[in-house]
Image (cartoon, rainbow, N blue to C red; front, side):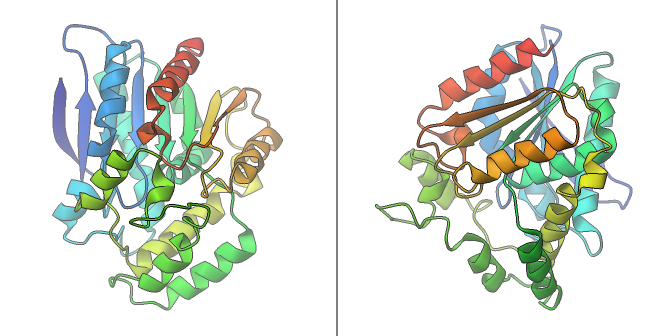
Length: 303
């Protein structure tokens, strides 16, 4: 079953949330999903329904500036006037609190993909005690110098106008290793039907605003700060999944750098799963059922 509802945040922003569940059972755990940049939670239906079949309940939201939340805000690709990434991260915390109210004494696992993994990594710095495990999908590592320069550039751009410049700087090289280019989004998945769905989806692949990129780079800089990561509880189980053909993970280089960040922060249980020829969206890849099963096994091992 599915249930959609809205949750109002402290700044009165209304966040669209979707819940997948089996009304006739009690969940083994709740999986909270955080989607990526310029997409929305409805794209996670197949994965969420699979998890329900395995005995879990699933919650996921459309972030600020995305999907139905962005539609209600009135501007896609714009998080907030101030502290947009921090507010979007705090939205995840508020949803966790809602999950705890709905399902007390039930394990919670937070799954973040791409930008959702960046939000998740910020979330961990303040709220790791609330969850029982974390899964990072399509994450990456970024040079501090490059992020600082990018943030400075974004700071002088019109806040609420689409930034083709920042979008080009962020994504133009992602398709460079793809031989058969058709639509520019082949780097997302080898499954052409899934890529076509993305291209045809009005809530996916849009160009964000200048302020969005400023907020995104603020979050990226924060997620890699050693001092903040030392606050993450060291016994938190972490799974990092990536395709070895994912440019966001720098073709695995950024994945190992990310794992090293958390190893240096003292985390004791870090698992990295890499998939041959897998591109950015593992949940939409041609071997996604294998990946679903691997994630399920890892969660069950950590219940």
